[in-house]
Length: 107
Image (tube, rainbow, N blue to C red; front, side):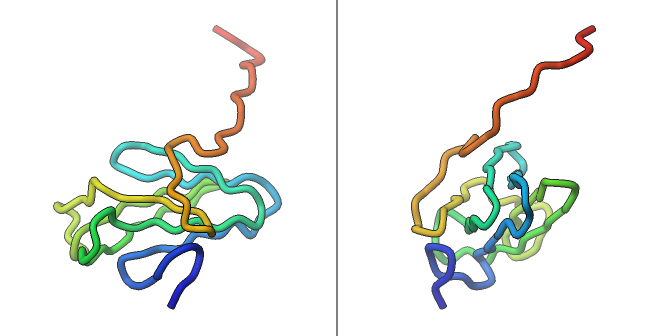
């Protein structure tokens, strides 16, 4: 089955922003961020084919944090992963990151 720019199976995870504001896809352990505009979809998966990846996800307001584990073993973090858009284009960390707002009360 093909969806969101590539084959999706147990080792691929599609993420779609169904909200009305930007959504941060945050990939650990490197803390890399990819920003989805409303209606956009990305797919997360291992860089190398043939790895059985399980995903651990944490959802908070406007952010989804994802860990990738080989075979579901939390001691085997997948360090080489890829995030692609709906066309299959590989995305870089910081993709569509919104500009930082000025701190109204700097210390």
